[in-house]
Length: 147
Image 1 (tube, helix red, strand yellow):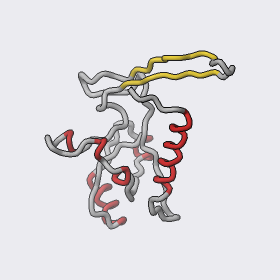
Image 2 (cartoon, helix red, strand yellow; image 1 turned 45 degrees about the horizontal axis):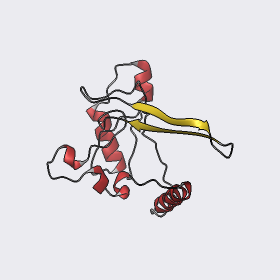
Image 3 (cartoon, one colour; image 1 turned 60 degrees about the vertical axis):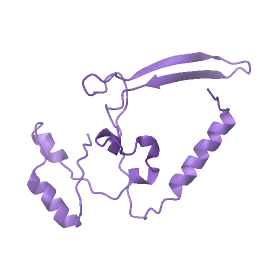
């Protein structure tokens, strides 16, 4: 297994940030983070192993600097995740083949907070989705839950 130095990791992080900053994003754009924490209480598809984290090193190094290094594992079908084409199509591309720019898109959020506050079992109605499609001149609707 190849181990990377801290300098290599910092360079990789800087390059990743520069790549993200190069996307053409308008001033009017607002990012909505749809992620949920991955932890022991994350819900997973039945039979999929849950989240685990193992501390590998937790000590002060020879320079007197505290270092904690761990590893984590998680089933891919729980919490916030991406269903790539291979999930449904045998020869579809896998996540490692998916360009990062395919994970960022324009969109609108249908706010159901008021309805859910009045009725915890509220489900968004077809009429509300249709109104949003017409108002925002959308061409597609992707069902994403944000809670």
